[in-house]
Length: 604
Image 1 (cartoon, rainbow, N blue to C red):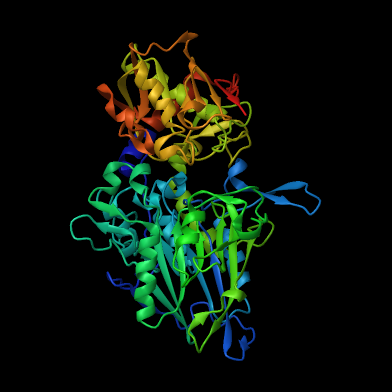
Image 2: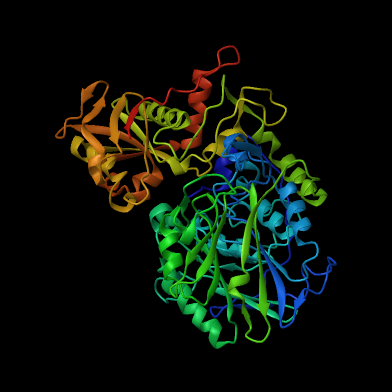
């Protein structure tokens, strides 16, 4: 959970003035859903009447996992893969709110009934431009993009339920106040849906579970859920007092409630996803979604057949797949990767007599947010305003690198993962010289460190803003004592228990080495007798001083054994640790090379 802005400002040794919001207040939402009339938010773009006898055309545009990326994301985070018919691939630079706004506005042209939606993680784990201001800039940008409906994701809870409600309803931050005298943040002018997030005492939804969009005689219900396992990947403080319910049961419940109200057209916004066999944005999942794996595949097969499409996220993967519903009929399941690099366009016909979507008419396409299109001037103005406020903090150099230092979260080990783990071990040894090793969760590393300049700082310069983008959560670096057997158990937890279906490989500090054998199953994939610390086998009965961030120290990401350590010691901010390590180990004359990422041997 991120700490207050004042902590970031203190760490950065800078003071800021700041600004309010551009959006309007959100529609009223109740525990029974927000019934919202939208007579023409996206109308007036011209085009034909789109009648086909008793049916009319409907367009749904979707993004997911935006994570506050107002500026074009850098490195691999700012590219998508295009697969050509001959099987060759091409990397395309994509993303940026200015280009996304233009792309969505162009896509709406000619469509009298269009709605724009997102299934979660619009905010949270954001670059400094948004994260420094508690993601108010991103909510303003979503308002400007004419966002209609957003479902919650796990990162909407990074700062807790009260902060999520503030993003919906508006108002000054309780600790940092308003960012410009006389201006108050007005919140999202779209409903944020949280159908399966309830108060653990009352059982009532935290926010509206669904909304109904009314568009010239077309009524479509949208239900928003996040993954049931959100408490496992968010700090305990962020989800305090909340209960997360089963996704399928919740969607089915509100689909039936909407049906009783005469709303038969239903689309689910699900912050849970899958992994396609190809990372190309235009890949084909195959018949029946055969090439799509992960939790969303089961959710799609089990969810009420009355749901006409599932728009998903969380895994940051691109896919447009057909997965059979419980009646055996194909149903579209989509995801537009992440960071605003793609948007999904779904087109369909709405039957005015049955008041339902014609399932056979539903089609979907992922579109690239190319950067060669015109930038939306209103988004440019919004971004420039916030950049001017963040500049004193963002542009301060904290280190120098000789090449890109990348964080491939799909890999077992990455160069940037090694770097972050080394930085945390160095910080831990300042607290306790007996610290032995550090472990870092890959999900806490949000972007690459790129050699090319992101602004006017020059190639190879790492700025505070770039460091913030890598580690935006403001976790602390904590120390705990584990037995050697517990260390081995932690390593096994990467591929077993909560992580069995989707392994989470911790990034390890220098000196710790071991082998992962992917030809094995379960916990046996960690080759126990290969684990070494400074060349010596781990002694199951010995004690080891282990550095982890505060999220992992609480058992996050399925690493429950880390919460069982003894002699805990809370250190400083993880970003400050990275900053100190870069500053101490690099200079303009002697920049830092990327670590070799050779600490974990992988057998395939």
